[in-house]
Length: 372
Image (tube, rainbow, N blue to C red; front, side, top):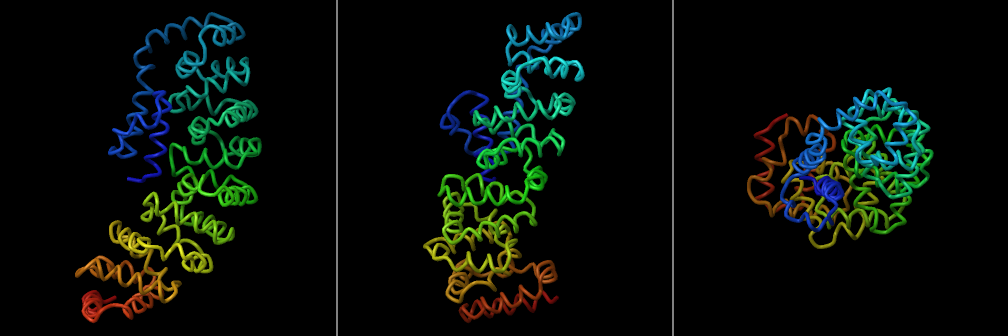
């Protein structure tokens, strides 16, 4: 279970239920996919229970002029009923009604509307109206609603929203709440390079405040963006890298962050690995045990080449502490060595220098048993 995804789903569920996050502590053992399914089912309940009544209201509305429907919707029905009725309307007519409503009211409706049930409507809304509503939602700090619509909007509209919402913090917090983390690569690709650097600089200057959201972004994008954003972070200096490591260790995110570090350039890796924070009690142990737990050795071992000798010694000690048989887990050799033989074998040699005779003999035996 990803702690970051679990946190995001907990916040979204607490918002739906209108209760503080602390009231949902009993759900802490559920994985984030279960929480999402629960939230979506709860969100569907109202519409499922009232569908016959809403369908009759939608049918009756066909007899009324568009302008009158918009006025009644705003002044009588309110945003909740309007949102649910919109998902049952013919999209073209729903758009015509929406265009007669004020931006503030459209923002209110957006906070209730379920995008899965209104995809055609969302795609048909003119970009200018989407941008206007997005500005209002961003000003309210409603990043959850902004995130819910990213996967349903055309690229051109998303670019327009990014340009219209100048807050880098709003952009980062919206990314944290994306319904589909696979959409992150698409979103990041639509962010202008200067804006992306601005987001990284903001995180670095904000202390510990935004690192949860930042690490959610950095660990869910693809390898290309991981390396790029990781290098942007390293360029912010030691303080930024130290904050990244502190948050990673505090939230126990090493299984997600090891691939992030592996994707960074060699100079960035060296800068990070030279930090005193890496050598603090428990950090090397947490890294090694995370690699063992989630089979991340192919990502971790090449990083060893960029470690200073004292840090390699710590890594070797923690590997040895895992006990006999560890090299059978470290070395699924054919897949690992064929992927990066020029980095893995020298890394193993560097580690072997700091192993006991018994563990060095075990490593040699494992290498002989798995010829490439």
